Image (cartoon, rainbow, N blue to C red):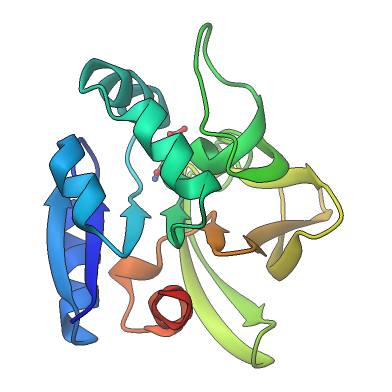
Length: 194
Ligand code: GLN
């Protein structure tokens, strides 16, 4: 049986857990090293990346998490989770660290005030079909290395299209919150890698 963890330090843990359970996998909340060791895949939820970063270090989880992701642990980060998966960060706070899981630069709070919270119709590139996505003080991917696959883009307040869902190996990141919709495709993509 596949066990997927949801990092449960802060953020919308319950919604990810409900969606994953609906897809038929065992879910555990990850707050300790032993729990991290037990999972076959991990979700880093939306919330506040600065807080999750601090708590990862306070709970002594950060280094183990970096190692497990580098060793190929399938991982999905949404919103604050996308920020945490980035290699480089723009508009982070002083001292904010990321996990360096995906060779990309992420701009935190990029959609800014104009789109503090918005629902947007995207195209989900893996199947070319529409996806209704909810953005809440969302980041975008500012730039990325070869090998990062763009799964969806959206128009920012600057009028330009920016990647809002990407994949690199077994790591997936979305600017939006797939866990608060009825659309299971993002979580299914994670499970297909587990
Ligand atoms: N702006 C938040 C951050 O930087 C993310 C918001 C969210 O996860 N909904 O962490």
